[in-house]
Every structure is written in structure tokens, then in C-alpha cells.
Length: 112
Length: 116
Image 1 (cartoon, each protein chain N blue to C red):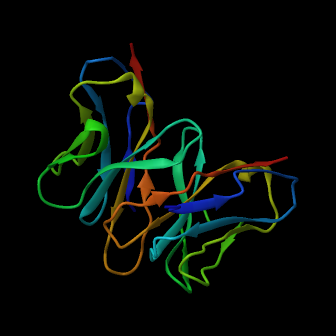
Image 2 (image 1 turned 90 degrees about the vertical axis):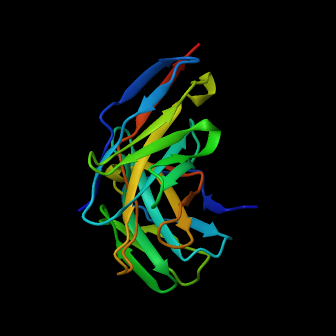
């Protein structure tokens, strides 16, 4: 009963480094999305996908790339990390429109 | 563009008293409304949703919410607060136009503190 799994849970990067945050879900959900959570700002949508091979930008997409080659996986790539990307990142999935999203446990990223 | 406002950063309630966490929204279509709760260092857990139908929806842990279309509000309520209800609560909205666009818009969150 894994649900949405995010790895790693914690990460420290140096400015300019790249990395990929992993997200996998085992519920066969079509919709997946990435959010970042910053104090006093709630969660903001970075990118989302409505199915394999389809991705689109959310509210704050700059500095992030995504791909959706399978239904299960939706990795988030930081090509050149910046201190402004220090945040907690959440991946979510859901079945169809109008249903509730299931969230992973989050990845706490610090860029120094 | 859709938006959600949670006007209170923090709500303090004595244990056993009723609680209300406020949420108002702005959307161009029919709203799908959600409440989520976040405990420290955890992900978000779904509490309840309004899609259509009865304006009063019941959810997990004894919480309920009332959809008010004229006031564009979706306030979260519980008749008797527990200390274990202390957490960060998020209201979220989504609309579905059939065009494939998706993604929730969240409010900034309200810290609910239940005092023994």
C-alpha cells in the first residue's frame, strides 16, 4: 500500500548542481503534479501531467523540467540549482478530475 | 485565474469548543473544493471535498465544511475540537473545463492550535 513515494527525503545541493527528485505512484493514476511549499505561501504548482507523454507548466515552472514516460513515474529535474529553490517539494497523483489528490511525504531541498 | 484566500494565519481554540477555519475562493467555472491537513514534517492528508450536491460535506476525523456559492466560501468546521487537531490546514480549489488542464490552487494555510 505504497501510494505516492518520493525520494530522497532530504537533499543539500550546491548552487549550480543538478539533480532529479523522484516520484512514483502505484495507483495507476493519470494525473500527477509537483508542488513546492514555502513558509507563508502555501503550495504552488510547478508542473503537472495528465497522462504519459503529456506535461504542462504550472504557476512556478522556471528552473524545473519534467517528463512523463510512464504512468507510474514523474521525475522533477533541477538543471542548475539556485538558493531560491530551497523548499519542500511535494509530488501528488489523482485518478480523474474532481477527485482528491494523494501526496507523497515530501523532499526537503536546501541549496547553498 | 483561480485563487484561494485563507484570511487567518492562525486560529486558537480551546479543547472541546467548536472550531471554524475560513476559506474563500475565486474561480471562473464550477469549483471543486478541498481541505487538506498537514502534520509537522509530513505530507498533506485529504480531509474532505465538495464537487456537487449537498452544500454540507462531511469528512475525516469529524470535520465538515459548508459550501456557500453566493459568498464563495468553503469554511471548515468541527463541533468539538481535540488537541490532536492541531496542525496546518489548507483549502484548495480546482476547476475542470474538459480541456485537460489540471492542478490545485492552494491557500496559504491556517495554523490551527487547540489549547488543552
